[in-house]
Image 1 (spheres, one colour):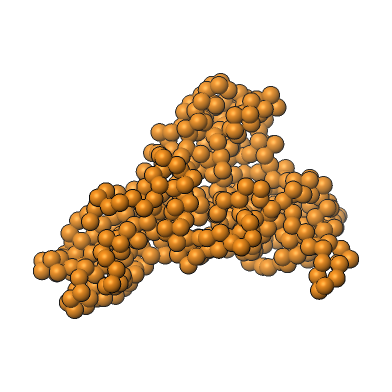
Image 2: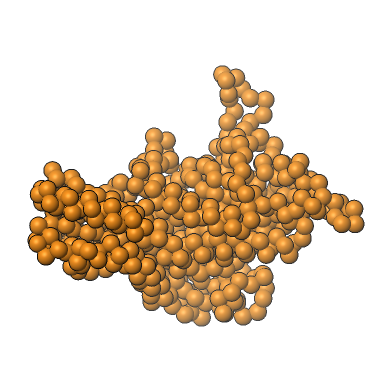
Length: 474
């Protein structure tokens, strides 16, 4: 039964986008609110998406040379206070433990909001000479930042992420590695797996990570026209090296402070996936990410249908398709179709008596709704090939949506007007400075990133002829 003829189970995006988002979380069985305000329970289907994100990201991180490690959840408060800008930036978000084992602790402990401080302490211990550099570390962990206005996946008090931390002999080496992570890990993953087009650039000084000398960011447009920061990579300079005494002996036997970076992405990317691709029928998951790429639905209770469906599942698996069989005979067909549509599985395959009579199956694309009959013998190879086409089409559609909702502007008033429905592209000089920032903040608009005119990343915001992308944001 076509989706258009079934009753809506989700609030339409145009009617109430936040309500639509919450409906998708519930109906697609992605996540639920946790027992503590601002926390979340990630349900199996949602966690399956995160696991695929982890796997894809982890491979790229390792190819970039970083190794995984693990550091404690609890950090002595004295560590946090060593870097002044860092503590100032994070004080409002800290969760602090003052009692343990039934006693007041001698020193309060911070539940990690990020790990620059504790990792800096161990870098100082492990690094002795230039032979120990670069030190390239990554950890997969949870962190806690006390959110005032939490929203599942987008801003939660506790979330899951990866955080990379590296130490280098020179500023140039650190800057190059921060850029390498942004391009070869983050942007490559987000564009080619999540099928989400990006603007990459530097953050304005007022929006850098606490304690950083430069922040590089990946910014994406959601389907309500707002921006979502999908990932960041930071040059920390020598701020943390000086605070924690991270020193090395150079080739001339002189002591030098290292130059450090940090970089991270989180379960916020699941929220980005929902809002960048979702429609009024639910999620739309790109095949490269989907942990279920195709679902085979048996239509009818006949033994021949069941046998054919199981054979097709096995054959799809042999062709490298991540496939699931829906043989819930007690659940109406319309309900089963709706369940998989809202979950955004890229391809639905229906096998019923009418199809089998013609030795065919019905193949339905989730991204476009396109439906076609395919011979049973050729179905698995055709569906495997279809995955690449869907992946490319989803990226093209998201890119066209972003570009058609981006406006070239030349004044602050035009920026504010354009940001009401999408992105504003504007010369950086127009929105630079405290006065311009005050105007934008009053209107709920911010500079998302700064680029050169050709889209490449500048070394700093003082280069001539830079452009900025401005938007409302999450």
